[in-house]
Image 1 (cartoon, each protein chain N blue to C red):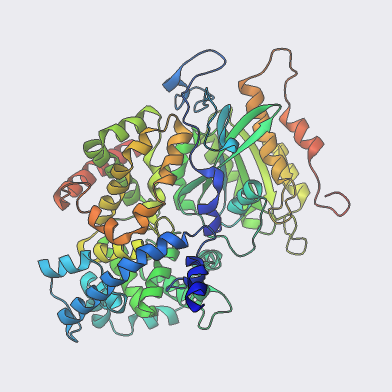
Image 2: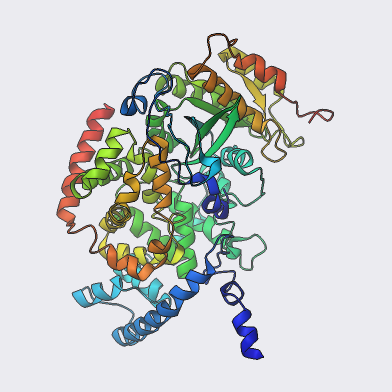
Length: 253
Length: 344
């Protein structure tokens, strides 16, 4: 991650100073955040913040990016957050760090607090304590790095052990733009994802391919789960992803 | 007319875009407040430089006494930093006792996996520092690679852990010498810091808990809000410990912290963390929910309070109150036992 942008990002600090309360059932305050309920940590500020319009939100979720070191977690996040890709300006993520982005999902302002984690194995023992708090996990591998793909199974085991049972999970094959260096075929990613029943797509932080979609799909799923109108049809993450996803081929982009 | 022209230039025109260590100033760098700060800090630096020159008088070593401790707390001038870090940490002694050891490590056969892991991070270490660019001459990436590979073979238990790249990078910037950087890294990881970087990272987990305990004692309201909203300390402070404040606080502030850390030991890290938390207590307490509180912890590492490194370094010895090594050690023992029992 670019150090400059890390400091600069306008929306990453100073969230609304609003009181907690649940719009749905009136469960006030403390209980909503950090309890062991499936959607623990969801917060519903009652009043918009006046400090910065883009920070006002109705509901917040925690999303976590995981995967081997160097697969492009930070790049993916920066592409989503700032729409930028600056080759060679990222620093390796140490420990755990986050960035915020507020999305408008069907008129609801959804704040994603996206936690970026260090990929190196030893950091897992530090970060897995946080898995249980995450509402969604984006698991990344690098299509130009076979080892990172082979390690996906180990990551899934880890996730099953520590994450919530109903955590929203998505598998992403990143660096899909690197045609010449590619060593993992898209079919292999699809097969693995099918095996484990998780939605899958290939992404490119460099070109932006499917990056917004990945986060948007997760945000939609989480929003629908937590505040579903009884008359509304259920949101199907798999179908949505398959419909919206773009391939890394030449004609669609 | 000349004067009129001068008055029309802004601080941004007058201050260099690249800092003395090779880092490009960020786009949102506050040139005005920096210039104002430097107008007083330069005088301090000059005064300290004269005092240190008198103290050292060409000597290549310093005694450990209260005067030197006071001098270190007021900042080691850049021209003496390498020497004082080397002698205060015992790195100098080790280097003299083991001539040729560093070279031998580099010449020995390398562990391919270790080399790969280190290479993944080479381009991702200070891309905003011109000395680390591939086009730089000399390119400090080579020195960084050598020191990390040598250390990984020297201490196989640690090998390479992310974060060490940044620490080593700073050591190379300050010492401009690979071998010295190696021995300083050895002093830090081997003697000064607990086991932060080993695969189990027990020392890191312990110190995060210790900070939690210290906050409970010294800033109870913050401790309470963290518990209330279930914000784990590791989420907001793991980078503080692992990177020893690199990329968290301004470069000059980090170097001043390290001056004290090499001389006084790892408890300085707690002083810095406690100062940041206690000084910003009111702000943190404004956090109304989990994401909000996390945001506050990002806010408190920016701004004039941390940029004025001289005032900040005075604060770390007053704001948190007394903090003895005995207290720290007791808490470390307690927290370590607690973590071990939980992990079983």
